[in-house]
Image (cartoon, rainbow, N blue to C red):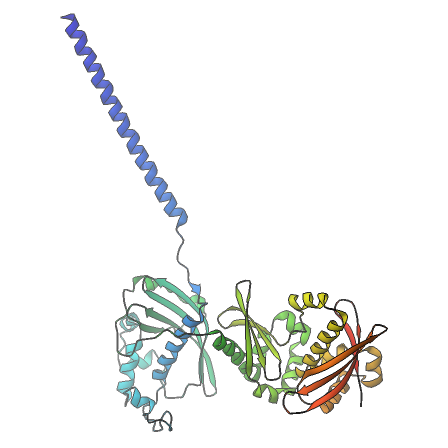
Length: 446
């Protein structure tokens, strides 16, 4: 009997131990699960990055959006009473006929099809009250240029905040818009931001709630392809327009170091523009080169006079420009100059001087003249400029030349060829090389 009691007690103890072990394992397992869950949440919290609006840096995207806005403005400013054809040499109708717009109602219906449907709903917009929200007129638009652009993405939908400059006749103004694209349906919609004064005021967070943009016949888009040559031309054309129509804007586009060294102040820059206005109107970009500078693109354009326009970019149409390669010496030129033989250095310096003359930078060309030569022939930079304009009125390139050295004085006999007319001039240049890539130059006087 005692043995049975001991056996029962032993069994009970074993069961209790087993149960205790099971309970302990369950508790440990739940604790482990909780720890894993907390760690997972910690990871999620640590790696979560809130969405921010990013600057648009891809040219094809940038100009696709600009093109969409141009389409929008073509409806906003459409004159449905126009009688002239778009191109009299081509058998096409007027713009209004091509758009199937023949009256005020047609025009406003079309504009509504391009608007953000939330914007329409929020303001209860219809063809009778749309003029209360959008300035619609029939004045021809001369320019619609995107100045800056930000974007935010959500699945197949992207929203873009755009600062655009619009010019109609003598009026030029800054406006702000949100352009939303549906990349699945290839559709877009536009929201005017009438009260916006700065692109940073635009909130693109709404894009998270947009599922699609329905097709409205005319609200479709195609992505543009922009090559390097087109971008180089856009930078060149933009800066040329500033030179002719907005001198202050052109001056501010010059890199600070360059404009300080080349012009000193804005007034001297204005003098340069006034003297060279006729030439500036005629310049065209004939050649271009693209360099990658630490991830940013540099576009180097040359006009028909072999003058350089160096655009250092930080984004689409965000750039500073330099108008020559001699005011600020590049690292590549400095390396090549230090490795060059003395006769080669003389040749490089002559090339630089000819660039100064072609660029009508008479101050820089005068500055490197030998002191005694200046005192004897040109006491002032104005006297030098007058002489050079009379004797060398055109733009030139070095055709050929020979250099001789005597007592560290180098005499070069060169032929310079006009870039505009078929004539060649014989020129003698005397040069003394100095430290730090400097030199003193004189030339034959007739």
